[in-house]
Image (tube, rainbow, N blue to C red; front, side, top):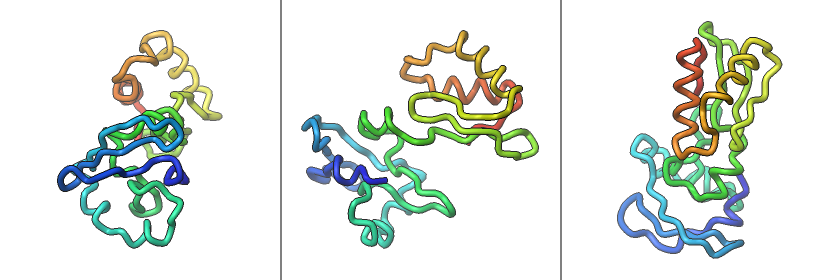
Length: 144
């Protein structure tokens, strides 16, 4: 949430598209607000109340979401606290997958499925998150 101190919006290129940089490294990146989050992004109430927060975060119900998830900065992709939560088909919360693609769960069945997936899916591939989510769905879980 406090990446507002580390990510700077340099300029708006066009509506919902920005040239940004990492304050700590000076590394530039292009951010585009995800189409399904543009209404959230337009409401700046929360961001005004949290001046140290990343400029791209917004509340959505009980959660704080990244509105540029698809084009987020490299450090965000690596350090995200939670990539998705994993639920049973009955919607029981079972665990979380963090930005380093580590599973945190006490559920032994999910842990076993996860360990098999680690042998099947290259965790360093650009589409690893999508492949992991698809793998979990194939095995009866709900990643959100």
